[in-house]
Image (cartoon, rainbow, N blue to C red; front, side, top):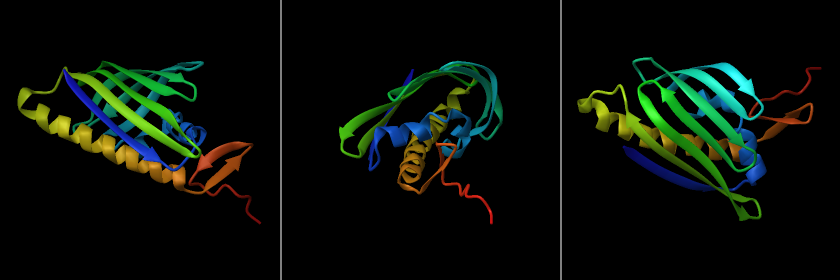
Length: 158
């Protein structure tokens, strides 16, 4: 079993951070090891999806539970990794939020000789995701129909 726990404080409200991390269809923009996703089913705050991960393009199945404004619980139920990842938002007051990302995984289809490499890539990818999320939270926000669209200029053209 492998445990990874990373966190970062960002200069943004928990609502602003939630708008970014809860848009799980955009996960490949933040998570470098995630090549593609295809949603299989979506019911309320529950999502099941197929993913392609890693440089070898391995397929897996994930289930996601969105706990509004608090956390995103991801279960890896099939594929090269099995276990869970949780993204937790902790309000720090004012416009500061701590993002905590924790992994609890097993290497189900990773050869023993490659496991340390994969672990280090997960740690590095988690820190990179935190950096990208923090940058998106600080970036300009546009709205379409009252909904935030991070980093996109959706202004009408003249």
